[in-house]
Length: 166
Image 1 (spheres, rainbow, N blue to C red):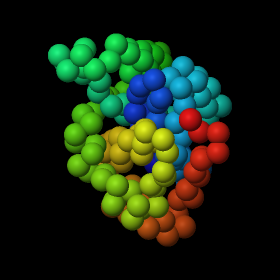
Image 2: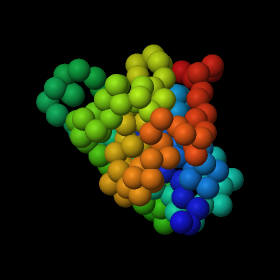
Image 3: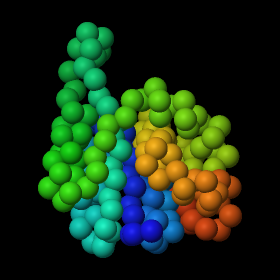
């Protein structure tokens, strides 16, 4: 398989990030930061990688009547737009996914079973991991079929960021 990086993003004022670097055999979980710092972190990290295929899966942010009543924040839209622009500029795949579908495919119990659950304020890091797994199951199911992720049999190393994460 070509050098592949898969990124899951939960956009917002605090943005969650999860990354699978297939070539390095690492999964990065537990990352969340303020919106622009998160976008900068993703783009800067990718600029130092030699991946031939990059896939970014971002939670689709939909504005409804309830959204307007609850918050005036537009950070999620800005994060999505910035990452979509970056992906298009570098010929990366960018797709948005529904929160509901990601939540069904990777509930907390599954994240815990896989060793990917990280307790963070707001849970944005875990939501990003849900989008990472959903994207991988849709686009690279053979990674999951070979069972390198389930139970972490040593094929992938989990890199968890706790300290300093927002």
